[in-house]
Amino acid sequence: MNKKKQLAKNTLIIFFGKASTQLISFFLLPLYTGYLATSEYGKVDLITTYVTLLVPLITLELEMSIFRWLVDSRDNEKKYKKLITNNFNVLGIGLLIFTILYLIVTSFLHLEYRWLILIDIIVCTISGNFLQVSRGFGKTLDYAISCIITGLTTIISNIILIVFLGLRADGMIISMALANGLCSLYLFIRLKLYKMINFKLTDFKLIKNMNAYSIPLIPNSISWWIVNVSDRTIIKVVLGTAANGLYAVSNKFPTILSSLLGIFNLSWSESAALHINEPDRDEFFSDICNTVVKLFTSLGVGMLACLPFVFPILINIEYDEAFYYIPPLILGSVFNVLICLYNAIYIAKKMTKQVASISVIGAIVNIIINVLLIKYIGLYAASISTAISYFVMMINRHYDLKKYVKIKYEDSLLIKTILIYLFAIIIYYQRNLVLDIISLIIVVIYCYLLNRKFLWSTLINVKQKLVK
Image 1: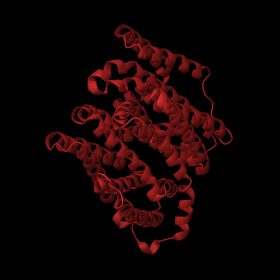
Image 2: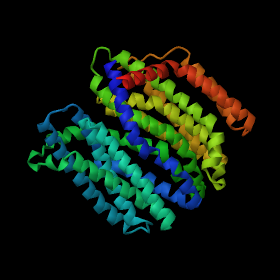
Image 3: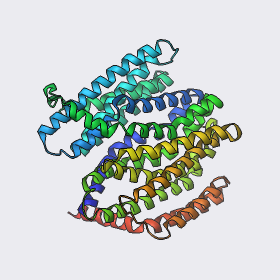
Image 4: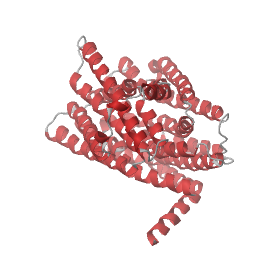
């Protein structure tokens, strides 16, 4: 119970912080779709996509190894200083090399927003690294506060720059840089990282060991990027920037599910690393996986039932076509639940090569389906290819992990999930108000029955806390 309570506590703290950044793009949708044309929004979305690709390449996925090493060195100040020093060595050199190469390459290209993109990449790289350091220290509250700072800065700067100053696409890019810059500054001061840097502690053997752990994660990151966002590049080339804007809006809704999963996964990856070698590991992991799968499959089908009512309120009529591409993307996000649960176990066991190899398969499947179908079924090709590639990775992960950890799922969970999703998707495409209301009622009842044990135990725990 202690392990579960600690996992729940960390997840709750991270949720209140991370939700402010992960979900912020969703709540700003009315602003973006109201003030930006589809082509402008598609352009900024593409820039954000490439920033997410470049960040792990610059640092050789250093942020993942520094987190894992810090978890193993909890409360050891001497080790902390050594790890932080070498972290700054690799981070600084990586950013310097990238900046030089970026300026050389872009000097031959006509790249719109050249300097803004460079600043965005640098601050996003630094903030991503510092966030993982705070997690490695076990400073969950500081992690959450930094995320809140990022979220508030994003909201305020977007409103000022887009609405009042009329900067439109430029305003979105500048907002991202400001938000990540303030996040980095807060963590640098709050964690007192400046006191831990001592270049006399530079250790090339340690850097080599950390890189041996993190470098296999680079193909994994690239593969995830391909699965998640290569669609945008193919869409832009074949269908145009406006189509990319529609697809970006479609993605915002399943991103809510992915964001919530990402929030949980931050505390789950720490918990998996701490308890990977304990004797009751399989029982603990099975319990968590069952609970999380039931909860997130319910959130996914609940989103499908709610969207017919929510979509017209949040989204400008110009983007209405985006409504039809959402269900396959939600399915992909549901498949991603199991993938992330399993990835944390692989990483806890320091088996990063296995993580990378399976992700590459998913990326290849995504590209092949996209290229073959996009000329015939348009944007449906992008959403369907994403769902299928996630499904392929999920199946591969599930059967490969059985070699190392025995996870058992409740009987009939798969069949019930398939049936409720088929029902919800069929009703979704009818766009009929009466059927939508019936679907919502049935889905709410199903989700409650599936999760009632978890919901009641949570309510009892909250009540006990309040009484105390």
